[in-house]
Image 1 (tube, one colour):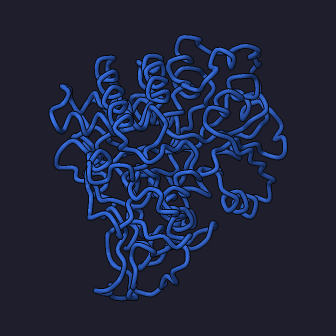
Image 2 (cartoon, rainbow, N blue to C red):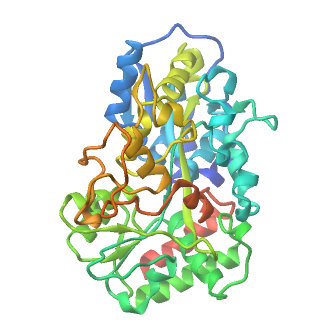
Image 3 (cartoon, rainbow, N blue to C red):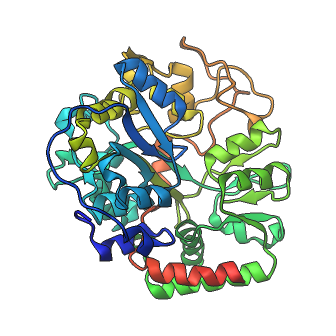
Length: 446
């Protein structure tokens, strides 16, 4: 198995059966390919949607085949022998370590090969996270380690294409405004809270609550890489909450979180923003919280990216094709408006000339109303009767400059800069993952 480090893989992979993933992995040679078709992209459902595939094919006249899988499955297949036959993969920051850091399954991308990666027009959360997100302390080092292959920042290790700031979704019919993860543990919502059953997500949310309320000792810089004592304290706390009946349900699958909230079985939960949109589309109001970053309970920040598979993209002759997928499709004018329909943002939003007002070979930018709503916190030009049912995919966005309506809808969670300012945690796979998963089984069994 070429370049697969067993210790590091077990650290980063996190998927059940990691040892099984290592079995049967085979090596691969170097060399250049001849542009084999179709281009093969293995992606999560949220990271590689049909519209993105169609846009690439439209722009390049090259067939692109997308295999949709979960992050553990992508890890297993890429590191289990399929890296030879896959050109690109998409996961998010907590799943990328096994592929981009622990092993050499990823080819760096020179920024010089990406025409749309202009340092002056990319958010400094990606070009200088240590400065832009300084309130996260040592967590910013983990952002840099995943983003960049070199200290000079000339090669992207795991190029970002989407990101978001996860928070709490709640039904405003039953829940007043909330801005802290502590709301999940508030007794007034006992028996009506839904909580995720993914250790690497739920434990950090809990740690933010506990640290902010002096239940545990720690530092914000360590939140995304907790020690064993902190992990034990968080799991013990969650077990107590579960046994006390705080949680109406737990969820693992995205659809389950939607169903629990849409049916009003649960009225508050740590759901994803696309789930909040889908809850609204079923007719149930759902507000996505604006988190209070003044303390230690900010957004759970993560990013998804498109990695070039090593040696697949090189041997199959598709390095340039994957770079076009990243640069032409995802760093162009069209993609920001497309993906904002699910609540996701893009790294190049600061390029307003392109993203807000411009166009390129990929299509038109967002236009003034949509961009200002998505990134600058401005209201829609038209009045919206029920903001908690507002669907950006159904609204008729104006391409002309206009005036925000005092009765219009504003984007949940505020401006993009406020979301960065109020982030509290950057998602990675922690060093003590084995201990975390062992203790998580105690929570699941409670």
